[in-house]
Picture 1 (cartoon, one colour):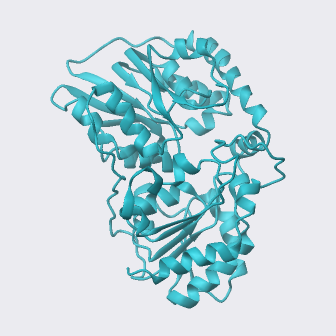
Picture 2 (cartoon, one colour):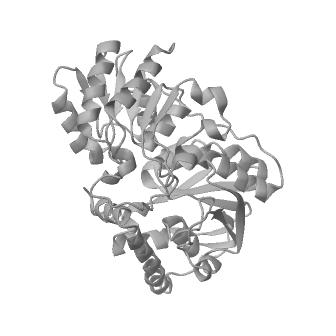
Length: 395
């Protein structure tokens, strides 16, 4: 596990440790004194969207790009995105230009953090929008704080728990804060609400659609089991994956494709060893982000507990089963509850138990040994039932 993931795992197991993120402000304040502020240049106005989050967040956010184009027409505005380097290809399909850095490493390494601050302060923008939320001291807050713009706009999510990001930091990072009207809104709908509040217009939220190419050499028929999670607290046991994987192979009689990055290698190889009777195509570390989208978008069936894979599968219309806890149920998982109707219901199954503590947003109230209890309690039988229902559907 990378240093970043080890630290993040510890912070998820002990939520109070997340408060150490506030210390980043004081490091940044010192470093920024030695980085020259940029001057305004060029005739065309520039609007920057600050989005230093993970792949699944990016997929959900990109559903709302049409709203931004409506607000900032290309004849007058250059639309720029700031994102993690690997996702530049994804953003470049919708933005005029993309600026990148490694926001992940910037959360743990002083050298990478200095580089991030230099990138964010490398040019001036007329408007900068952070649509993610300034409730916690997350990378989007610090990235926005570092950049220079005529107006910097952030949002504050409606919630019951105490805000981690203090008011004084929000005042330093943003010129204007939008107070979101609803609590625990699915992220797709949230991004639409942000741009409705900015524009004064009404938009109809839609699930993102992603282009699916044909550049990766794969058989016509295959299924994907993606056993990896972003951090171990969200990891469904690999032995249960193996049990369901055998049943899928018995029904579909086609190869299992294993995909992802090097971070997914260890857990994926554990799964492969547990199902030696199944033919496997292992392409871990061999695809770009858009090829990763393609591989998921051509599969007969996808089983995962990774929400990034889940959102890609939803956006490409694949039959998919996601195994999860309730920690972000309404905001990340439950497309159907938020008004996407038969489009999602026709090819998606969510296996997650509802409980009084759901929607905790990774602030687990229970003692966490390795895995969140709400993830651990999902049984192989429950997942198998959901997968069987997907396989009974027409392609």
